Image 1 (tube, rainbow, N blue to C red):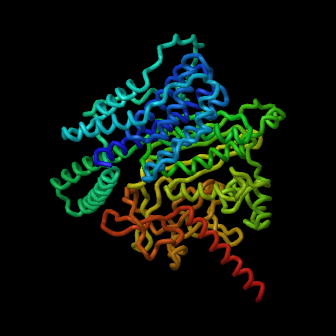
Image 2: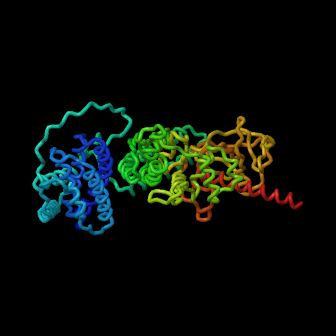
Image 3: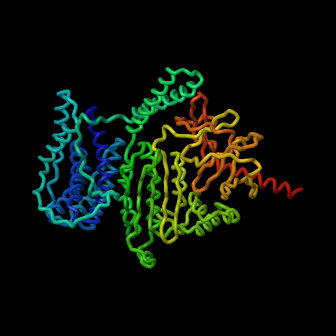
Length: 606
């Protein structure tokens, strides 16, 4: 394959994947309302566009699958054969197969022939199917077109490429005559839910208005901006010592320009979460059919934007949460009837930006999670002792589902019950410097709330010091900063506690956690941190203040140690270790418990 053809193939793969994501959502909407003419036309155009690109590049099995789906949809458009359950199942299977084919092409593998059973299923009951695109003609036309542009030394822009596809398709498969559109009832759109039927066909933008940039170049720009931020912070630290008005003005101007450049580069990397959300209507439909449940998925806030790396990393955790909402959360239709609920269960996937973070929520109106059942299951599986479980509040019991190996399923299925999933979700979200929380009411449903930063490249932090060493705490986890007298600390089962407005919270000393002797100070500075549903106070020597830091990999000697999430350079040139708030609490409580048991055994032996 020539370099030009290779570039065209790469563009085709990108566009085809985007179209497949849209088709998955559009097919679910069309299945709910087969009379939705606009959605039917959108689905037809999607298959038609993929078929055109596949024919241009001579991917014959892909052309055959798209052509069969196109014929079946065209029969519905003309009113000859309305869409039925067999047609929808066949179209969904075609989408799955096309996804596998795109993956094979991307990996450089040859395509297997299109399954005859699927082609026959799509054309069943149609009588006289449409004429198939003749492979040698399409292949010859493509080769001639590539040779023509290559000989002329011209590049093919988006408009020329699309025009060429249209001309090839017009010759091979003329469009059907227009059919009068049936009258549709008036619909009310609340402006919140994303409706696939309202997704327009891919628009043709002015070729001069956009440019495709290699992701590696964007990553390099982000790294350079990160270095610039570090240099800016260094200058801002030095400036007060020099006391020069001209320097002050220059640093202030640099500060403004750096912030604007940082924002511009980050914006270039932002993508709507809809790129991930688009796959979930089809996923929900397939899972619900497999479980014989009636489920409707509502998508809200698909246009909310995140760093592209975060968008891709969120895909797997959200798949787990949506599948679990349908499998564990939504009841069977007869159970919902007995509970006085409608048979149709509802799952809502939503995203909303709040400051420099994005909140993503998966909510269902199912049976909810019983904390007592979670408590019993965790004890039976040996994940927690009965004594420890008895001290947990109902909210804390819900957090036990994130333990590795936890499951409440009595039977193992293809979807769940293998003791994996939710611990993976929490680990992945923590890797993204985020957190996940659970809210559930028995009989009413559950909410899983994910909170992640807009970007992973630059992190707003609160800097603290211990004997001159600097540590960074993710600012999103900081609740407040306070001071207290050491004598005011309480002790419950050997764990130091701080009475914060009549709400006792664990008190951990960063000095003690680091293995250092406690400081003799009349007042102790503490940072109240949020870890899941629990808050705790971390005692430090002093707080330096807020600073944006560039996240770097940990030094080799610290990799794998609990409690550390990364490293960075701060304004005065020193390295600061970024602390893992969740691991700090987990290891700190464990050390206190072990120390308490050791003291108890010592007292007993005496």
